[in-house]
Length: 341
Image 1 (tube, rainbow, N blue to C red):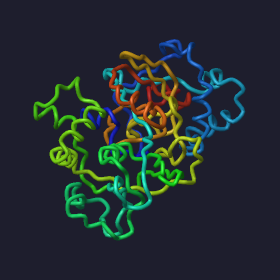
Image 2 (cartoon, rainbow, N blue to C red):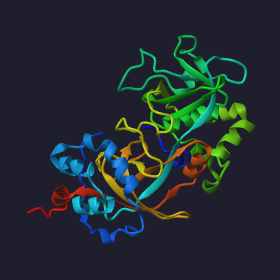
Image 3 (cartoon, one colour):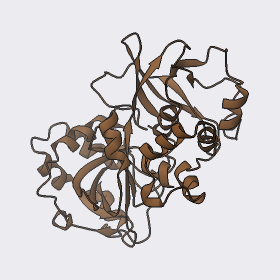
């Protein structure tokens, strides 16, 4: 979705691939849980974006994917697992597509606007901060409002996620996606609460932040404005409602099978085996189909959990270690690990 940050990183903290130092070639038997996972949903997700991968390395596997009768046999025949940063511990977080109540018109109870990008905003350098946009209101009354939402905290986290569904008061649904941002780096409001001594790190969550802002409206507004970054939206109604939001590859992401990665290290569109530890371990084949400004490094992934409140609650609890292993076409895997002919 090209988001400002993942939810967990928001609370607490496409280019050419750069091969990390000393990547290691693994076998499929080295992947913990490989035989227990059903890779068919990952194959379905992989096929939606495979055509966008570099044809030099990926054309053969993409054509094979269209006719693969067995997902596990397909991946084992065409790919090899590569651990691209063997000395690093992975960090997994979660993200989701918010679903919030909204109105097409500004009225009582719906007073926080979601804006389209203004034409005068420069690209590539900082523009007005969040505080300047919200306090001075330079965009008000210019027809840039897509909709108004009830809760400013929901609007804030919608910007963090970068896309969402608006349940309109007239019964309709509008889908919005990331259009642009004001050029300022993201600053964590959760970390700011910890810095002020108001919460311990283990106490901070999206729900806790929302309750604190509601109980302290004036200070809560200033807290949210601690994050100088501001995201602008566009309507994305061409995506069918039963499908996920558009990721960085301009295709719908799949709950539980799509991840956001750092494309400097992991090719967008590549299958990635994840071994997430923590309270709810995950051993599953995913597909790298999204990015996020907080997703940096070769062992960093943001797992897409779906749409709505329950997906948000699950995503908000994820901040776990483990490892991620990229599946690369056999010739490419041998080349990057120094084992090619």
